[in-house]
Image (tube, rainbow, N blue to C red):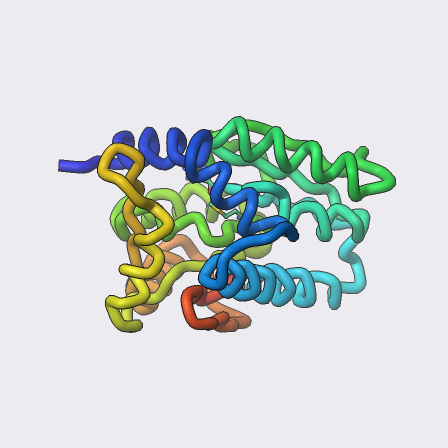
Length: 229
Ligand code: SAH
């Protein structure tokens, strides 16, 4: 039987080793294969959606934002450019290291962004906006529920999250599965039912105020922006 601890340990190891190399490339701009290119394009679309939502805020530069599971900083870096105060954290030290390097390379000023190695369930503090993009796919729904509850407790105003919806056909899972090869290096891809996710959010006092869906051939991500009801 898997439990959160096992899943977390596996996910952390994965994103610190083979998964790090793979996703650093996908979330980069170098040569990748066709499937990876498709996933890169889909992921970028998800990032652009969230950045566009937040850039439309008049007071963006005064906001405090927590990017939980920041990866290589694909979202945190463009958000830092707006002047918002960002805490970017990830369970994988390698991911955080890469995010820090990318921020130093591409930001003139990094004083408003802090990078930290941290399991999202170990995060504390209060942020106006908490964001968790493409992380919940690594956990079963009952564990995702605990994570969402914790993230909700950190958010004074909004929680934005994305997940792979369960209603789509299983081939997607298989395709995603290609990116998690080998029994010892495996981390599973978990889809979640949208109604389950919405119920979890509502149990934590949050209701959906904006939504979007990214779908390319090999990448699917439902994005929900929720606010305190
Ligand atoms: N949100 C980023 C990265 C997505 S990849 C983006 O969209 O670009 C998923 C990331 O989640 C990986 O970097 C992985 O290390 C991180 N992660 C997985 N489980 C986590 C947890 N429990 N706490 C914090 N980060 C986690």
